[in-house]
Image 1 (cartoon, rainbow, N blue to C red):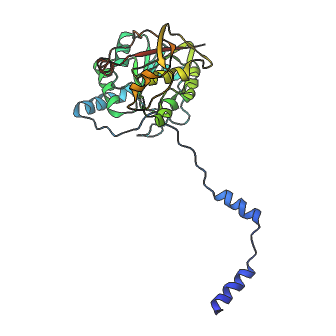
Image 2 (image 1 turned 180 degrees about the vertical axis):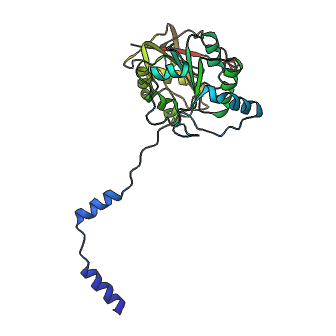
Amino acid sequence: MSQESDQLHETAQDTPTQPAESAAAQAEETTPTFTPRPVLSFVRRSGRLDARLQRAWDNFADHYLLRLDEREGSLDVADGFTLDADFVRRTWGNGNPLVIEIGSGQGENVAAAAAAHPDTNFLALEVYDPGVAHTLLLAGKHELGNLRIAQVNAPELFLHCAPGVAAEVWTFFPDPWPKMKHHKRRIVQPQLAASIRRTLVDGGAWRIATDIEDYALHVHEVMDGLDGWRNAGTLTVSLPTGHVGKGNAELAADMPHADFMESERFDGRVLTNFERKGLEAGRTIHDFTYVTC
């Protein structure tokens, strides 16, 4: 054994052995903890604005775009923020009923609704820059004083809403996430339903629309029979009782079907380019009205 090895051997003998309990405690203290990332209903892509939309952003964002985010460029809601009656009055200057639209897209529907109902306050939630910019363009062009826009993650915002602050919530043509493994990303989920139920006034409504049959079944599975909600639909529709993956929609026709209750087309929803394309493609529009109870 070399001299270096002798020294190492002696050092090892002189060093007290750490008790197993102490070693375990130290390992526990140094083991990093991980917070699971929330499942998002969107994938944020950078969307460059053309000159027209950039002008709209520059001209109207200060007035119409609410800064509810934690930091610039973030979709997280700032800690300590609460969307309550006081915030509504400070922001809109009145205590009129509030309608929140999840995923306002290009803003066609919410802008038309705001123009048609000046005595109602509207809050459009949209995460994509081009959609936000186009909504700003419509709001500024038509001088819609009762419309505001927030670029935040909608399910998180509803966690920051005071009970009974909104009269209605709208979710029209959400991302269908057609792949089976992505169904968990669909915006209509029990957790969001619970948050919206708390946010709405008694008798308030969550209005939903989709042109995807598989998503319609998903809505029924989540919402029908959920405590605190009543399906106010009056139309009987037949839907397959099983889900199909992306590209397999034709298989649904051979599946067992069951009857479900849905609503007449909501007359407060304008026919947007998106909905028109769905109709031209032969898809059926499914409307839902769920009322708090």
